[in-house]
Length: 86
Image 1 (cartoon, rainbow, N blue to C red):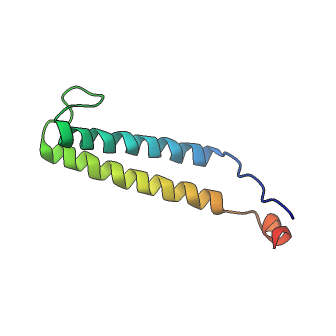
Image 2 (image 1 turned 180 degrees about the vertical axis):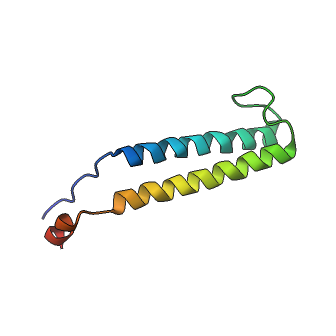
Image 3 (image 1 turned 90 degrees about the vertical axis):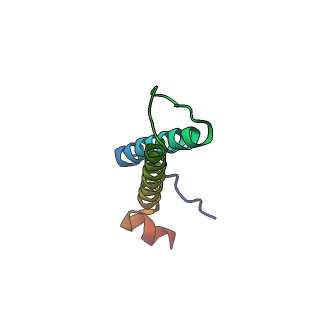
């Protein structure tokens, strides 16, 4: 039985991972402010409920976008590997 090759870390995947982390930070910032009224990293941000909800939604969207791009990159297979494997 042949094992599937491990995916290689590419610059694209690394950049998408950075965007994913940024989305997590934004999401956590908005969620913490909504839950406890405290800022996470930047003092005084967000300053209102509307800003907190906006940051939370933008963070969630950024996480979903980045995760989908990472999965897309990982699922790409070179043509010769696809022929050999199947």
